[in-house]
Every structure is written in structure tokens, then in C-alpha cells.
Length: 253
Image 1 (cartoon, rainbow, N blue to C red):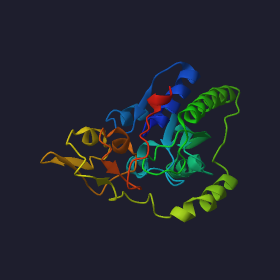
Image 2 (image 1 turned 30 degrees about the horizontal axis):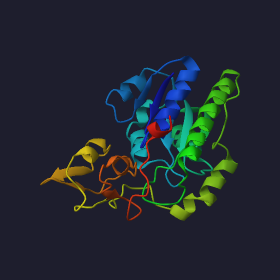
Image 3 (image 1 turned 45 degrees about the vertical axis):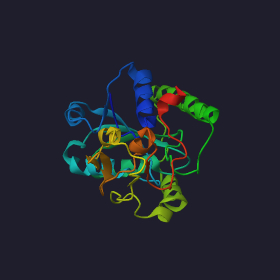
Image 4 (image 1 turned 135 degrees about the vertical axis):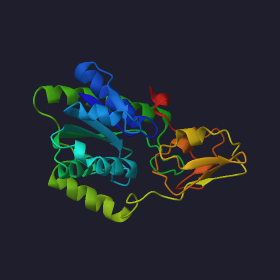
């Protein structure tokens, strides 16, 4: 088995890595941003795939990845891990349905509550200790999940019709269109920006460029929050007007 993931602030990578370590003591996890990942997928039939849920949906970058490479999913067996800050009825189910369209086999699904990564909004903010507990709980849940899988009872979180309805009516209809396309709403404060280039290096979409010692954003932000969490001057925002908290999974390990 190999692991494939898209991860913003590291939550999802941590969960996929933990799953693999418990499952077969391996470290075969790869980001969809790596060029060699598709070749590795083609050479394996069992895959655990993870991603952060955005507005009860799949990140645009991951959806494009699945659609653009639809020819390689047929017959692959997937276990899906969806990470989230609060709730998503069918976070795993959305990707499951998309993969099934291209002939994939869905083994199971898992939802994991993790520290919120939306750093420029106060909603969902928890103190340091509560975030540490979230990560510990996720760790324990992953261990139990692997035991269940080995006993022939993989969890089916997010995969049934009731989960689908909960995701649709609980969140997705209220945020219709939020993840259908990339956003041009990323804002970089030129008074705060020092042109260090860290945000440009972090961006998975090459959406940030430097010019005359200042960073500028384009119209292809996939809302991963890496740049916002890493900016040393807190010069970048997306939903809010100022950075409330910068998060990275390494803080809680």
C-alpha cells in the first residue's frame, strides 16, 4: 500500500503517514504535487488517499488531479481519509463518488477532526491544549481504524446515502460554488510584505510571484493556507482581514 495526499498545514500528511506506519510500518506517502506520484500510483493497487475538506467538498487542486488523470484509477482500491476542522457529513464520500466514476474500488472512509487551519478567521479556533488533544484523538482513531481494517471491518465514514445528505444539507448547499473554481481573493499587504519569497515557494499552484521585492497573488488559489500560515510578517489573508493564528501540525507533535 502507498499513501497519496494533498495537505495544507500538514494535518492530512500526518494522518496518512500515521495510517501507513500502523498498517505496514512503511513510509510510502507522496504528495500529489510530486511528479513521480502518478507513476507510483500506477504501480500499486492499494492506496490510502487523504485531503482536507473545504466547505464540505474536495479541494479544487485534488479534484483536477483526479479528473486530469482519470485513466489510471480503474481497478485501484482506495481507503479515503478526510480531515476537517469541525464537521463534514460526506467528506470522504465526495471523493469516493468521483473515483467510482473512473472505475476505482472504495474500501472505506475515515473522518478525522484536526486543528483548524483557517488562520484569518476566529471561527473554530481552539487553544493549544485542545488542539493537542484533537491530534492525539486522531492518532488513536487511526490506530483503531487499521485494526478494524485488518479484521475485515473497514469504517465507512462519509460513504453512505445518509452521510451524503448530511454533507449536502448540512454544509455544501450553503457554500455552493466555493470550491468549483480557484479563487482570486488571496490578499497580500504590500506594507507588510518584505519580499522574502517563502510564500512563493510554498504555493502548490504557483499562484504567488515576486516583483520588485513584493509578493503578488494571482487568480488560482486553492485555499490551502500554507502561505498564510508560513508568512513571517503575517502579511497574507484570504477570508478575513488579519491573521488570527498561524497553524502548523508540528506545533502539536
